[in-house]
Length: 289
Ligand code: BEZ
Ligand code: FE
Image (cartoon, rainbow, N blue to C red; front, side, top):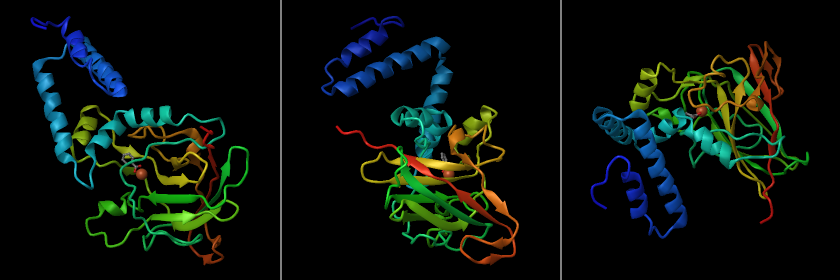
């Protein structure tokens, strides 16, 4: 293994890895080396570009902290997250489609009873969200666990506020005996993904905007069903066809219905506008092993 050149180095690296004990790691590393070298050959990567790439990835790593995952943002904005989600969640027609997880889920969201106001004091237009969790055959799925999280009226998540004292706009709820759920919150706005770091600079260099269309996140789990991580997007939002992270699916876009005033689903009279959303989730049964 001497005198390797631009034609022979790829095979030499692959051969050096031949004794990898884990077969999956061996497969992944062989393919990674092949594609990485093909990329460098195809674009005839210069030393300055190689240097820039190393520096860029270094800055991505340095931007990471317990509350900021710049590598996930990089994966999201390069469409890798959507690709990995799509190829790991192929489902029968009719099931609710999955989309990207995003960086703003937390493990310790507060539990609420059905019907509760999960905004926990956020200001904004009142929004009443309801629906049913069902199986592909139409059967209601009782007691499914729904985790929901959302941006506020200005497009920020609670965890982006360094002064956050309590969680706002996120909840863990349990559907009733018939798979039905409902809660009150406020209408979230479209927002830009965090773009004050290297990923933001990359988007700028590519003449791309950082915005995501307005959406509400759901993670739904029920025994015997594949976990569903998805969003419901707002019909009519200006960023539906240019989501910075490529997460929009037509089946996940729904009307967030505006009501000028009147009796809302909570039985109270609202003198200003409020919104409603009804959305049913169809889970994919886990196939018997
Ligand atoms: C989100 O929807 O919360 C999100 C997804 C990807 C990147 C940034 C934010
Ligand atoms: Fe989000």
